[in-house]
Image (tube, rainbow, N blue to C red; front, side):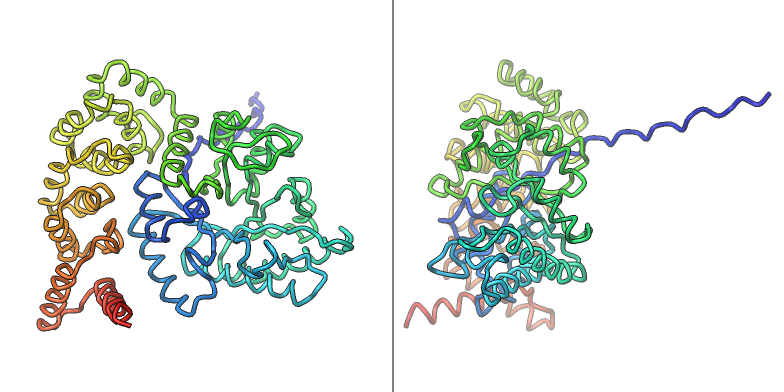
Length: 480
């Protein structure tokens, strides 16, 4: 007798994904955009939540195309993914915060907000962004919730029709105090739109703590099918105030575990818009907190061991990438380096670099800005930068011209480092501090290189040509 087949095997559970952390530019409002991106990348973030505003990237500037092309190159050179945020406060109306919205009783106001969001979709397409995040707004006095919801549905439907052919995902964000403030409201809106694939969800973890009935980790599991963007910060129940990690009530390890287990692969971006006064330090503390809360068990144990036995770093550092999640090797190695007591860091860095393979040397170089964020290393690690600059390894040279070199290399050595990037074809957007440290002598060197290339009938790199154009424009304005 032929045995009956058993029930089909259950599908294997998804392997947890390594999370990618980003930081919002609205938390670095006192920085120029180039410098904000330099800080975010230098600290080790994987991406950026870029708010369209007058200070960083004005969507209504006359030279928008040129700015977008340059921003895309800069993001690529720094290895940063991007989502586009549309929550600038007074961008469309200098008198009313966040106005007009898709809920306005005035058709012209609704059309203006829709036009802005359509522009954001176009910008996202040009930048290769993972999503465009937006929210509903608050109904005007006298406007019923039913009529406001109808206006919102019509606006979102029109935006979906713009985003779909552009290949851009929309991330609608429930926002406390707005017409759609929770997951119930998002699901109702999504159903009213006909459940379009393009209409995804931006989930703010703090908002879950603020007003959702379920714990934030359960909100993540409920939202998982639609997630295209995640914002994160600490918060307290019933109070919509974005707080640094540890200042609120959220238990983050279960939240981050739920995100990883759900298979979410988008950015998890810190949103602290009122912390620009301490931007770089807050961003650094935030990344430390997120990495600690999401650490692989091996990493947690290894960090503890290095703190108590610094000499164990010599054996743990080389094997870090094999014992943790794929793609997190540099981040784990940076955590191990941070665990070494300050006075001993430089000696360990030199030893690990000199004895390491290319990947380990690269991890050391990439960790330098994080270890020196308050000037702790001083110039002690410059010999490692100098060694990397003597190589012809594009990855090592690119890492060597990061924020640490911009801070500590003397002027002559820094110029030579920049010129080596030009000769090797490394994008100038990868060079930290170029706008700050470029001087007439570097410009002369650029011009000489460009003249040589032109005389030989060879093309001048576009980014070098643009730098020369920007310099000439600046010179003209300086004499006005």
